[in-house]
Image (cartoon, rainbow, N blue to C red):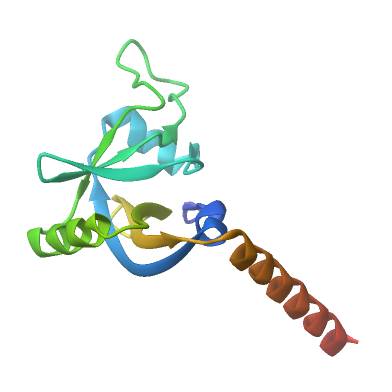
Length: 150
């Protein structure tokens, strides 16, 4: 019995930010959290990353409580530690010190070994006119695809 691949995206991140560099990070989870993720019960809406004592943490990530969890169940929106090597952490920390840059979780997935991974990106916020332009490009692409299908 093969389960469907888990691929949870933060669609808002690509609209609000210009993604510069991406990194794949492990995430520290409890038993009921990984079970909920494997069922696809997670969301990256309004999540962001921050540094505390040289470690990278993700804040506001929603992982729904596991239905079969007992008193050991987790809280849905707790801070979770991300696992990166020192070189990547220093590179990200340097990027966030610059004005206008932040770290945004873009995608969460479960790899072939069954481990949950998060793709984080150093990103620069878009201005309002950049967002309008990206919507215009998206509409133009959609119109071009419609024309070619006919």
